[in-house]
Image 1 (tube, rainbow, N blue to C red):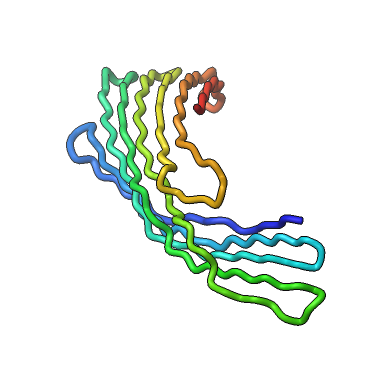
Image 2 (image 1 turned 30 degrees about the vertical axis):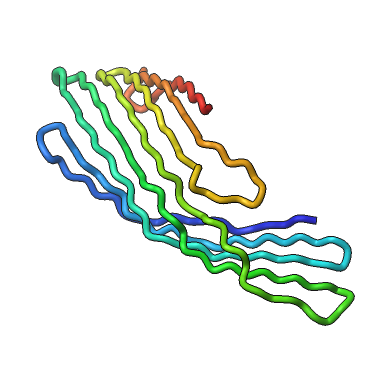
Length: 178
């Protein structure tokens, strides 16, 4: 029987500043942390692993908005997040219900990190509709695992939105993850 619980949470603050007319730079500063526990039971033996992970993290974005006229604009942007190792404290416990003893030790540390990512996007907006396209690459190659195959992520998104009334929108989204 395998059981697990927990996860990572993220909280932070975002800031942005217009460098020149239409060109903005932004950053997200975050604390990421949490605990994860896993338990495997086979007959009378139980093996438990727990890990507390945390780090401080930042990612950045640059956006340029070009106003074609009062009602139309074109926007292009790029986002980047660097790979950041998570600090971790791991525990490993093996016990048996048929004996009174248990073995406790510090758990093996696998490299756990937030992945590096880079994304690009562009949109065209009018008073009634918007069309956008974006691409995001997530590099999972620095993450170590105990037997699980981890692959990089490539995501493309095409989107169009149009408004029939001021409070009503219809969205057509096509997201492709490779």
